[in-house]
Image 1 (tube, helix red, strand yellow):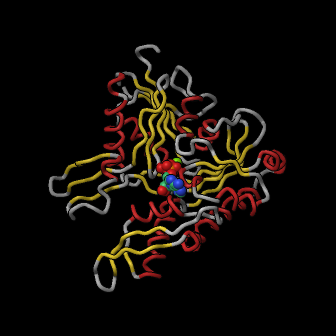
Image 2: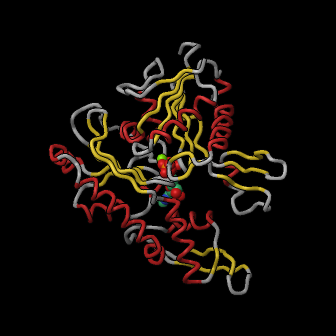
Image 3: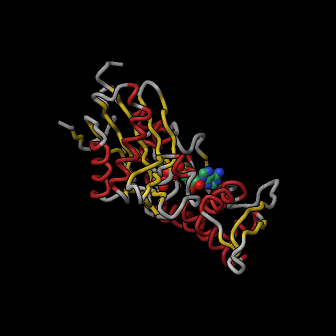
Length: 340
Ligand SMILES: Nc1ncnc2c1ncn2[C@@H]1O[C@H](COP(=O)(O)OP(=O)(O)OP(=O)(O)O)[C@@H](O)[C@H]1O
Ligand SMILES: [Mg+2]
């Protein structure tokens, strides 16, 4: 690799950020979070260490997620976070002349795309290419994105569910909803509050979803115990909940995802529908690991559903695969900017 070119792919996700260095592979996969001390007015933790503080900090420490619903919500914190991730990982490979390719949701607005580009430039990159994430993700799943054959990708992350029909390096039909993993966690909190008068934190809700959550009945189901605060007595209490109950708690979110897929299928050009009928649906993003989701979607749509092998790293892997030695992304018309 020439000394001057450090080609980096970044997936700045609502829940997790991943950094890929061409020639090396994935250097980082950490929580998109910063812990901010409002008394000292400074960031005290970044990434996984910040996420671990969620719900456990004194009131003057805030755990901030700089991205919401797939796009930047807090510009300064996003830049601070990305800078520290890059310093931690890429810097000792030499940061000089770095070229960054960074993914954005296909349906992000121009302003939202611009914010991502600016954050990357603010981190000192010499060149930034903004990449439509679904194309990178499809490539990372091992699909041919350059050909005429169409594929439908459903990426369910923390903040968004993005459905995209891809062919000829472009998106032919798409749809997205801001309902994904975070909304599911909140639905579990609400369900437990309503049915048990118990308050639980986000990390507990997330753990329940990831451990026993599902979209269809599965083998070996068993109840899970968890701790919360009784809203009547104000005291800590341990309770247990069954997979069946969590299915009920998540049913609105799962239905919304199905509806989003249906709508995209309805507006897919007929020439491409045939391809999709034979290839089926490709499921990726963290929530693709929700038990029985593939089975549920297959039953409801009548299509075959394939879950990505490494659902949370497909996007950066795809960026790496599409990246040329010049740091540009093959077939991408996106504007490339340069720091002076
Ligand atoms: N086994 C699992 N079952 C269900 N959900 C899971 C599982 N493991 C992780 N998740 C959820 O996946 C989500 C994170 O997925 P991912 O890393 O793809 O999101 P992201 O790329 O950061 O977000 P986005 O693409 O929306 O910006 C979280 O809500 C997390 O709780
Ligand atoms: Mg994502």
